[in-house]
Amino acid sequence: MTEANTSATTYDVAIIGGGINGVGIAQDLALRGLSVLLVEKDDFASHTTGASTKLIHGGLRYLEYMEFSLVRESLRERETLLRNAPHLVQPLRMDIPVYKSSKRSFPVVEAGMILYDMLSYDKSLPRHHFVYGAEKLKRRLPSLKHEGLKALTAYYDCQALLPERLCLEVALSAAEAGARLLNGHALIACRLREGLLNELTVLNRATGGKERYRVRLVVNAAGIFVDKVLGLVGDDFPRKMGGTKGSHLLLPRFEGGPESALYIEAIQDGRPFFIIPWYNFYLVGTTDIFYDGDLDEVSASEAEVDYLLYELNHWLKRGGFTREEVIYSYSGIRPLPYEPGKKASRVTRRHIIFDHARHGGPDNLISIIGGKLTSYRSLAEECGDLVCDKLNHRASCGTERLPLPGAAGVKDFRAYRESRSVLLAERYGVELPVARALLDIYGARAEKVLILTRERPEWKERLNAQPLTIKAQVAFAVKREFARDITDVLWRRLGMGRDECLGLRALEQTAEIMSELLGWPAETKEKHIQLYRRYIQNHFKPRRRDACRAKGEG
Ligand SMILES: Cc1cc2nc3c(=O)[nH]c(=O)nc-3n(C[C@H](O)[C@H](O)[C@H](O)COP(=O)(O)OP(=O)(O)OC[C@H]3O[C@@H](n4cnc5c(N)ncnc54)[C@H](O)[C@@H]3O)c2cc1C
Image (cartoon, rainbow, N blue to C red; front, side, top):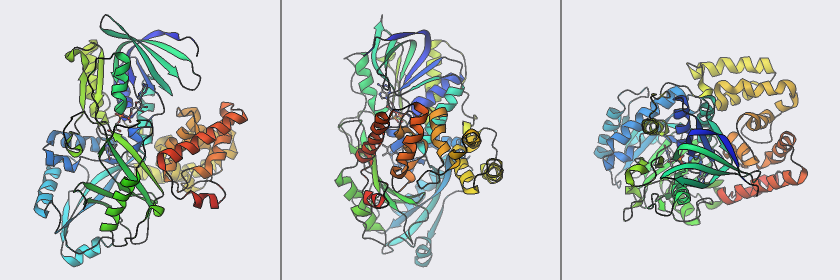
């Protein structure tokens, strides 16, 4: 390994971690005029942020634990995201069926919904309503078993269809505001002088080179890795994180299946159980189990798969769901505070912005514990206020009304999508569905992708995958979106979680384009192909690879 070079710049703030909270804090602070460095050891959204249920929600169940301010904050942020990222966040109808056997009776659910509506008094989404009467319920919920079904409460929350892209767009916004983002760089050492953290050593994981950065303040936004980062600072930090694992299954949609999301009380333990339509799949989740294993290699156990299948078979009329029908599974660890002795479901979902100075630690170190996808912006604002206070910097938060890059200049996204897709299709000679698909994931940035095809018309060709994707998107991910390897490109920039073959059919084509752009020799290209296969196998345990192999592509 080479000797470390020391950067000439002293950054006001270094942020460790490029999940949604780290990039949110980078965006907030850069907009306040501070010089910001962010280091991410793998890729943006490659850990918990990429493994959520994808809901942008108030968290109805937190009402049971009297977390009213948490619910209110999340509901306000839900509205903010609908406004600032309409291409990435969409309303989602949720149906809560109430059965005779439900622990929470209809009046209890109804009272919760009234409170939920009150706490979101300023929302743009419709208020909740309920349905009862056997015939009406049958018509409304044809996919569910009806024995014992008494009523239904319907309400709206939202869905971030591709949370990885939400995280990326916040990162891009931070970069536009001047933050320096080092993707694929791990913090490996810290230097403390007179009680202050003043230098960080960072490893560039692609080159093996080390770099040193002088900093005035550090925000540890490493999610479930917060304790590991603190371990680099010193040995005397008490444990902060007590994560719980949550797993999901992806199953193909089927005829007569649910059209809206179902939020059901699990028969096995009364926990929330979701069946959510997501592209061509149903997203089924989730579990909640204390986790002390390898934080980098998280996947669903067979017991979790069986738990979720049991619920599906119990509630859906179709029944007969088996492991073989599962396309893939994924798991993440909730970055919850360490609260020994508490049941997993009772650990608070409220975030903590931990100022170590107040607990005898370094004066210039802050750790982020917890924090939902939904409320990343308000968490970042709170953290930004504290950082400014500590650095004696006067500036207020500028993110509340700032559209993310893909929503810049767009007032009504639906209308924009319709007119813009026609224009882009004509201007660049692509089919209308291609233009629409680009607008759906890049919003107002879609044309920047197509501009690449001016010099390389062959990049208008489609990649061999479902969803609709063109080759220019691979090049765009490398040139404009901080992607460094095939996993970054296929999984997190192009959203191949939507593909029944998990991007495996597009692997060769992607590797070809990346090799050309990044100058990979044949053996490097092959290494990256194998890395992608291994990543998919280890994290998502695809169960139907034979189907992809049969088409000669797996
Ligand atoms: C099963 C499940 C379902 C969920 N569902 C929802 C939901 O529907 N809605 C919702 O709002 N929230 C949901 N959440 C919560 C939400 O996803 C997380 O709280 C949030 O994504 C955490 O983001 P983060 O940035 O704190 O952590 P992460 O996304 O884990 O990011 C931390 C980053 O730090 C990096 N890092 C670690 N160590 C270093 C180092 N030494 N150097 C450099 N970088 C480092 C890691 O690589 C990682 O990318 C869910 C969580 C889980 C697990």
